[in-house]
Amino acid sequence: MASAHPAGGCGAGSGHGARAVIIAIDGGVASGKSAVGRRVAQKLGLPFIDSGLMYRAITRLAAQRGIDPHDSSAVTALAEATEIRIDGERVWADGVELTEGIYDADYADALPVVSAIPGVRHELVERQRKMARAGGVMAGRDIGTVVFPDADYKFFLVASLDEKVRRRAAQYERRGEQADEEAMRKEVELRDRVDTNRPVAPLRPAPDAMIIDTDNLELDEVVERIVSRVRS
Image (cartoon, rainbow, N blue to C red):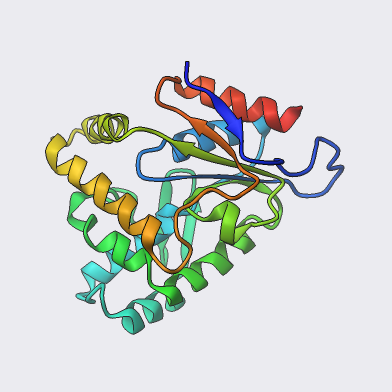
């Protein structure tokens, strides 16, 4: 079984009283952060917010409206003008549900470009903070470092490239889509490299995050480690 080790303190203890509790779960592509975050939120009776759905929604809208993802001004204006609502795994933009096809490979190349635009990140980070003002579990790539640097609990999930490709292929198969594992390997490598090296909100663990290597852990085992830490 792989080990989980803290990279420092992990926020406040259990004595939060009535104060809203924020749990940040970060990680790269196919690290399991969304599935884990959703299950953790259920166990703790907290709202769950998958911040990545917001970036996917803007990326998809830009493509549908013929906006070049490299046109930072136009994409930022789109993000500022679009109302986004998230409920679990579902996402709406201006009242129109975009859930079906939100993970389509057609948007894979544009997603890291859109996600790295400073204006887009600024707009969506502010909205993410408002969404979780009453507390909750939020999954993403910069939750513990940028969105909620003072989160009560911070976790950073890691996995090997082979494991990430296996998980991403399984995601496609569950949706009834054909999985090209070689293409997925290139996509995962590229996305993690771009996210790690982008100048704005790069993918990295917060100094006080607990880092969990998920390679040899089942989903429920990762969830239990996080829930146990929060309840301790």
